[in-house]
Length: 167
Image (cartoon, rainbow, N blue to C red; front, top):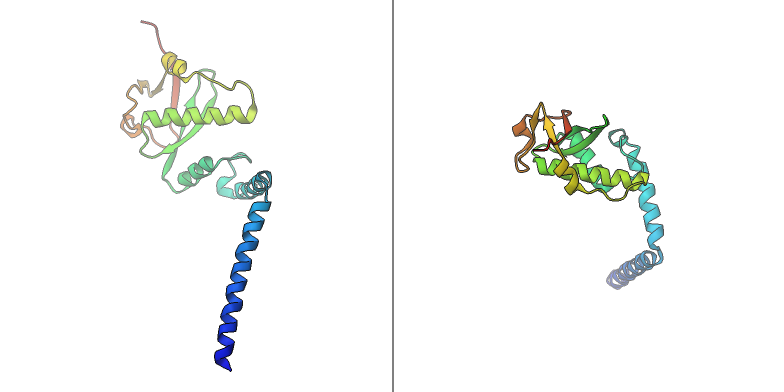
């Protein structure tokens, strides 16, 4: 009699698995994109309340969260970029970042900020880099391939935008 119960038990388990899979598929199909996005935003808002991530905006991106976590683990550093108008912008880059990676991170920072605040949607970065250069301790960061460490830039150091002089 025990032998007869085993196939029935196996059959019941198989049916339960199939029903569970079908139910999961139906639930996945029933959730609209907006509902999934709402659930994700709610989970993200809870995640941002963590003390390590409290500096992030409530609509933080996965990229921003990853950067903040890397910063906490010492895999990244914050470079403060001082604009010509005196505003200082904190930009997170990996420890062995190049000047080009700093420029890309700066560009991404301003794109996210503009998307959140509204205002000008397009900045001509080609114009910006033709008109300004970045400096650290009076030295131009002229070589995009050169590492920030080679210029002596460390965590929390300040880099400035300086207007280029005409020749």
